[in-house]
Length: 99
Image (cartoon, rainbow, N blue to C red):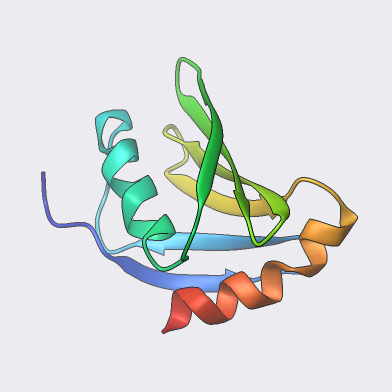
């Protein structure tokens, strides 16, 4: 596996889009998840939903709930809040990921 790094994080109103420095495959998602979540202290993974070409990782952080989404076909990765309160908290996640 090529060393994958976060190349760019784009902040949108309801989600954060993450782009990596090179192409990735479904078998890379576990490492990518660790890469993204390693910037956040005290993350608790609630559930992993594995599909044919898409994976969703539900996690909690600071009493809020989020979903980290990976779509293999489009090479897309985005992070969204599970509810309105969590969506508003994405600004803090964005700040943490940029450190």
